[in-house]
Length: 357
Image (cartoon, rainbow, N blue to C red):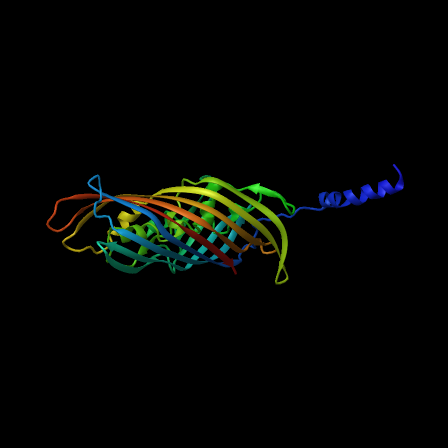
C-alpha cells in the first residue's frame, strides 16, 4: 500500500477509532448522603369526548342527548427528599416531606336535547391528607422492598399503602456506561414511577355535591397518575444523546420514546370517593364498576446532573386515548331501580414536567 492510500485510510478510520477509544459516560444515581432535593412534578392533560353511549336496563338509551365535552386535568406534586443513606443505585433510607399535593379537573359540557342547548361548566378540586406530612422509606434487604412510616408516627397508616419511593426517574437510566448515540430498552412496567410519581397519593375530591358523571371525572380521572394501572404493556426506548452544559454543570441528556397501554379497575377508588359525597336525599345510587383503558404515545427528555448524581429536569408529552366503562344502579324519585351503563371514548394530549432543585 502506497503512502497516499495509507494516509487516506487513516483519515477515514480515525474518527471511528477515536470514538471507540473514548471512555463512555456513567449516568448513575449517586446523590451525596445527607443531601436533599426539592422535586416539583406537574402533569397536565386535555381531553375531548369522541363518542359516548348509554343503556338503561340493558336497552340503548332512547333519550341519549347529543353531547360535546372537553376537560382538563392538572396535578402538582412538590416533595423534599433527604437522602439519609444510599445503597448501590438507590436510596437505603429516604426522608420525604410532602410539601404540596393537589389536582383539579375542569369540565365543560354542551348538551342538546329536543332542539334545546344546555351548557355546564364545572371544576372539581382534590386534596390529600399527606400534604405537610413526612414519610420515612427504609430499604428492607430481605423483603426487597421499602418499609414506610410517618415521622413523627401517625395513626393514619392507610395513607402509606400505595406510596412509592422512586421519584428520581431511575427507571430511565442505563445499566452500563454509554456513549453518544447508544440506545437501550426501558422496562415498561417501571414507567409507573415516571408517569405516576409517588404512587397513590390519596387524593380526594373536595366537592361534596356530585352525580354519576362527575364521579367518573373527579373520582376516576383526576390525573394521569390516577388513571395509570399496574397492567402496563408496550415498548419504551431511551437514547443517550450526549452531554450538555447547563449553568456550568455537565448534564447527560437522555431521549425517551414510548408507546404503551394500561388498564385499571377504578371501582374501589370511586366507591370510596362516593362515600364522602352528598347526594340528593330523594336519589338512591349504587356504583357497580368503572374500568379505564389508557394508551399513550409519548416522547420525552431527561436531563441528568452528572456531578450531583440525580435528575435535573424532565419533560414528556404526547397523544393519549382513554376508554372508560362505568355502571351504576339508581332509583329516581317515584320510580323503580334502574341499571345504567355508560361508555366514553376520549382523546387528547398529556404533558408531564419535573424539576429538581
